[in-house]
Amino acid sequence: MIVADHLTKRYGSRTAVSDVSFTVPPGRVTGFLGPNGAGKSTTMRMIVGLDRPTSGHVTVNGTPYARLAAPLTEVGALLDAKAVHTGRTARNHLRAMAATHGIDRRRVDEVIELTGLASVADKRAGGFSLGMGQRLGLAAALLGDPHTLVLDEPVNGLDPEGVRWVREFVRHLAAEGRTVLLSSHLMSEMAQTADHVIVLGRGAVLADAALADLVRSWTSASVLVRSPDLSRLIEVLAPVGATATAVEPGAATLTGASATDIGEIAAQHGIPLHELTPRQGSLEDAYLALTDDVIEYKTKELV
Ligand SMILES: Nc1ncnc2c1ncn2[C@@H]1O[C@H](COP(=O)(O)OP(=O)(O)OP(=O)(O)O)[C@@H](O)[C@H]1O
Image (cartoon, rainbow, N blue to C red; front, side, top):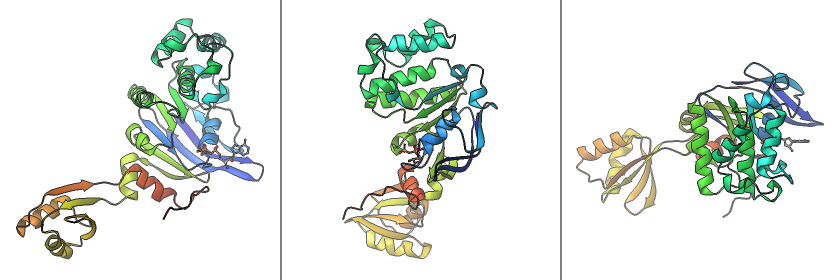
């Protein structure tokens, strides 16, 4: 369990994280989202003791990271995979880490297997591709078989097989009862990986909710309808408050009525339906709606 309590971090006059409180419980994957510069990495660095909060505090299983007796066996962190600029082989890099933490050498071989590094484990880690570096970072995070994992952009640079592997792997770790906090800018990936999300914007918590609830609250449900008698269907649905947006001839997106209501009303009026598809907004839709006001680095809308 990670507990952040009124965390604030200032760099000079710049407030990177402002009075942030949240709890990351075990047994589920918690996604950490937010626009560039929102304060995610800074918060993660404070969790693992790499940055000291200006005020507030954060604990892992009740203890600040700096006071954990054997941190590697309690918290695994992947914060900056590029940080491994080493002339050592991946295996020796992991062995050195294991040695300083009293971790059995056999665990090194285990994490090499687990992260799919076996074929390159005896090559210099400094020459690794971004994806291989990510895998090595994950291997290092897993070395102490920790109960808590803090992973900053773990799928960055991974190929589709690697992305799927991380997804299944972190879900498995959470299912084992571990605490998993992971950040990603890939919304479709996050939607498939996280159970719960915390969204930061300009250093503050914008949302802390179950993924499904967040999507429900920040998007509107609609129903895609196809009918050879679409205009009459829209007419008979108007009294129940449904509004239509044309999609293409014979098809429209309806809001304000459920698929069940639309189907029932169409049947009552003998209007044939060729399609009736309920649509919920995506995590990306919810995220964009939620962070619209706090995005610092906006791109110009294309016309
Ligand atoms: N060492 C530092 N010195 C000064 N400012 C910093 C430092 N680290 C981060 N910041 C600033 O703090 C703010 C939060 O940065 P942070 O890297 O935590 O954001 P982030 O949400 O991880 O962004 P990204 O998605 O781009 O990785 C930014 O404005 C950043 O410029």
